[in-house]
Image 1 (cartoon, rainbow over the protein chains, first blue to last red):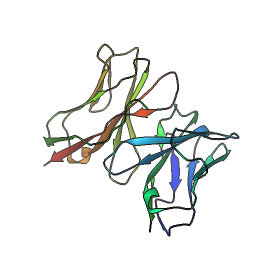
Image 2 (cartoon, rainbow over the protein chains, first blue to last red):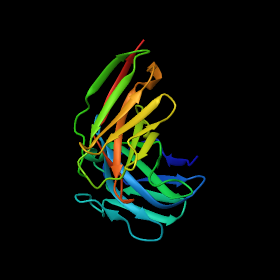
Image 3 (cartoon, each protein chain N blue to C red):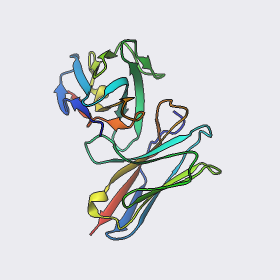
Length: 116
Length: 111
């Protein structure tokens, strides 16, 4: 089946630094990738949708200059949290859709970001 | 999204019991629904899906029921096992738009 690899699984960074999270589709071409954020005991909140080779579409309230998304190839999308602050600490999850995978099925394992 | 979860209701069952987890959705145009299982610290894992032209679909130990009239979705887990303990989310989409996640339910299975 379709596999999405997300890296790193955990990261701790200092306030003011930037962190990059990678999302890779391993056995299919991901034309679209989605980035979610999840706070403890809450549901997944869509942050942005990225299509290969074009700019990401951000959900309302999500700062595009703070959460930089790049989808330069059909197998890789990255989310960079710039100038991270403690309130950015959260669980970030990507999902990917494309062919032959079904639409939006497959999720990565998530990245626990802690900003100290 | 139209369905945003802010709190996690909990369902506690005994091992071997059948579990039923419910989900209400609000978008009447939604035509595709998925149930996910999420264990602590991990990403959501696909369990089963159903399209709006069906009202029931069965998998291994799981059954999804869809009632479009009242916009209700349920997940039935037969012979629940301790390994089924996790948070379960329903998700919906309309015409291949993005997935909107519903309120999650924490399932606790005691031996």
